[in-house]
Figure 1 (spheres, rainbow, N blue to C red):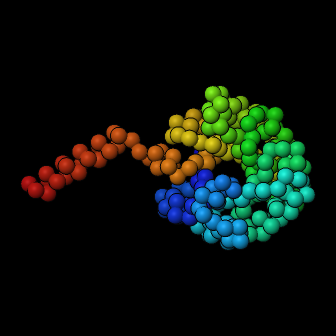
Figure 2: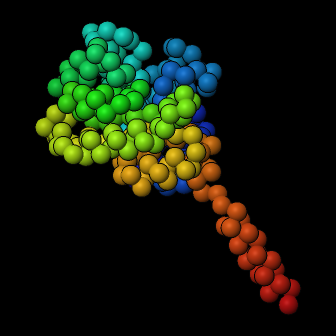
Length: 226
């Protein structure tokens, strides 16, 4: 499994990148708004992220018609060669995805919740599909079950003829709320987990690790003082 950071915060991205495990970044309008960023600095902000992270950086279209989504896609893809255009899973989004994929621009179809949506996204040429987990949990449904269904369904078929450069579709487990979400996504075979920085930090934490380290340090102190 690869790990993406779900943020637009440059400090968080720089810190996570220093750990050596960061493969990409996903952003959206909400995440950019949280940074206090302004509209006229958005493209430069994405460019700064792309400078830190050499892997895929998803930047989202904020349009709702296929024509405007495609125009957004052209503009976003021009920011840096590793930008992936994030497109909502709608009818207009599917049409725009097909156009962008035909032009060699990779797309991450977001706000995906069901197997039929994921299958249509893959057939439209999406390079990445982002099923949401936590938002299902928010309405008392099992988001992990839905993710497992998407992973299995997409894995049943070869969609490489539809994607840019014939690359296989990858499933990004999105709307991740906990380290357990990551564990379960990995066990079911999701290709990528995109996680908030707080969750990424929790993934490395365990009380037995802390206890063991504390014990080692105390024993070493005894050796030094012997």
